[in-house]
Image (cartoon, rainbow over all chains, first blue to last red; front, side, top):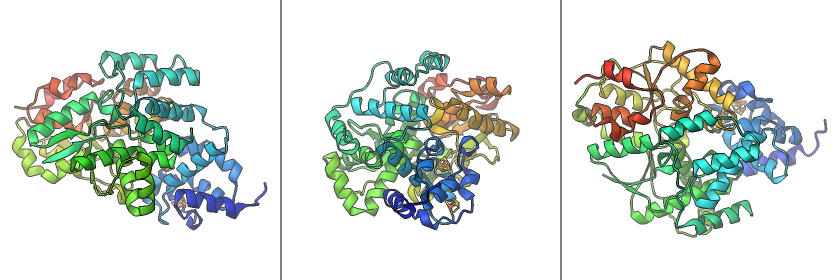
Length: 179
Length: 288
Ligand code: SF4
Ligand code: SF4
């Protein structure tokens, strides 16, 4: 493994996240409380270590950065005051910017589909969003029963709500997502 | 008391029962909620998963509109509350970011609007006043108070309650005459938005939470977040199937419990929308 450019990568993530990744001393507190660590490939404390030493590719290709649900448990408990959830955000954003194929495609597809719904209507419309997600993920038959249960309980809005300020929202998307 | 009300997307669809019960109990308590006109989605987990600027700008547009109303904001959804508050904190820490973001949303914003979770406002009113409104004591209800993550974490952002052992919901439940179950999973994460994209993770996490609540002696849960509620309630039968364990634990919104104690009719609280029927715990657990 090459360890070149470590400083550059660490600086980049530090700047984007606003978090002093370099001050992590590997106590493991973040990993101990992380709800998704049990299913992840690398642990939260390994994420900070890999950023510190510039293991850029493996960390950006990890499943961990996509599995992170942003629950802020690590952020709350880190004795070094590192908001690790923000570091995870920065890594995901970097992975997307570099067009690195997400190792958890169903999760990244979900996020994209969700945001596309917001971009179009200003709010999320579950039925169209879920249908679109199913088409994009190829996961056509999962959760049909769940959908039916929700429908019967009147928990799904049939008609989408469109915002008057839709053009404001489009503008925000254009300027941030660079579409 | 008058507040700008931010229901968020869930309370207009999957969490309609949270919306109904919130409006009903606020009315009882004399809290006037004025919905933010033309509010947009806060971006939820997905915006901050992919783009920091987007995750700040989307909530900020709502805050800028609230500012024109001259009111502070109540967001009952813990996830929306967290996103709006994070966005507010970020622009308050950084004037340059505030300027850039106001430009982005095309609206002026001072950064001064306060964002509060509904539970904070109820807490402020105090248990004395709550008790005065109670017409039916929720006796025999053994409630596991489930705060989830985003309502109390991280404390520097939420500025609400204790991140490891919060008390506001506990105190409220006690004031309603129900029993609070002591359990260690008050703030454990339910898997949040992974329900659709990574169902097995949510099943495992909610299994842990539900079986812990059961072991601690709870006969229901109280929640303050549509994501938590749907993972625990909507997914409960899936979890039971996957883990071969029967829970039968209704997962109420805390506002529904308040409404029941206040003597409001079940339909005005959306009780019919709960997947795990609350009928049994309510017939044995409510007096008066
Ligand atoms: S809790 Fe903080 S200091 Fe400890 S390993 Fe995690 S990031 Fe590093
Ligand atoms: S924010 Fe992400 S990394 Fe941190 S504890 Fe939660 S899931 Fe794990």
